[in-house]
Image (cartoon, rainbow, N blue to C red; front, top):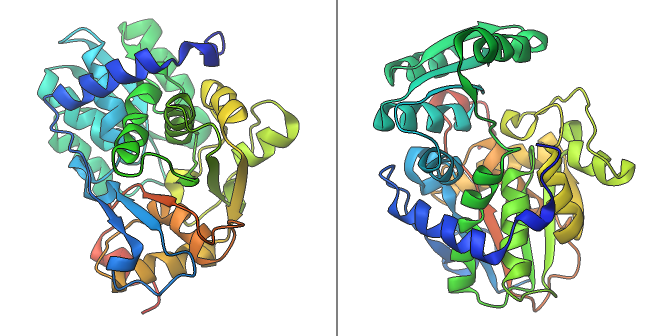
Length: 323
């Protein structure tokens, strides 16, 4: 993936991906954008904040967008392998079933057993192993079994599919001043930031938000290259051990700043959103947490967009959050 340039992401490519996602048999929807002021969320001094509800997306997260574009550009009936314990794995399994693909998900041993059961229900093979061994198992599947590895975020087709979030945002708020998006490996942030800036909103400020204990993109910005680190966060979907190579290049070009939030900020965001009737998983709340905790500067009088990225959280997990 390292040889792919940020120049590969063009408006023509993003528009084509948007149409592919829109036509996908996976049932991707154009999720609602609601004004903060029309919810029961606590009043905020910036009165033009819009919330993009990807927690209401098919399969419960934005990941289905990238998967829709990725699978549309692969042979039907192909044989694919990936690494994931989260929302990408769920979307990958869902797509594999609809496309009739032979598929395998390699999961870390600390992943919830319920997620492995769900993936198996879609007909995919699941192999569980210690995190340091995951890539070697993927390589074995590629070399010995002839499978094709599909990456969950460092993939041109995934990023272009994810960018459809940004294009939908611009249909509601054509000239946003500030766009706030969570960042794990950077596949969503890279796509959305490219979509916004390439659409002519060069002056829009784009912020990525990461957990303090999983700040791979933040550190990559400091080092001016993708870095690997041990990550630890209450938001596992934002805690891959490295930033993607292509996402890093795109974020370096289009993102103004990476903001860090604490696990307590994220916990508070989950609870605040739930009280307002919005079920959002910890990883999906990071952008909201950054705004609610006043980590994003100069919002007064601005048109602000906040993306809630996923809603896959069970009632047993919600019981661990403050009322």
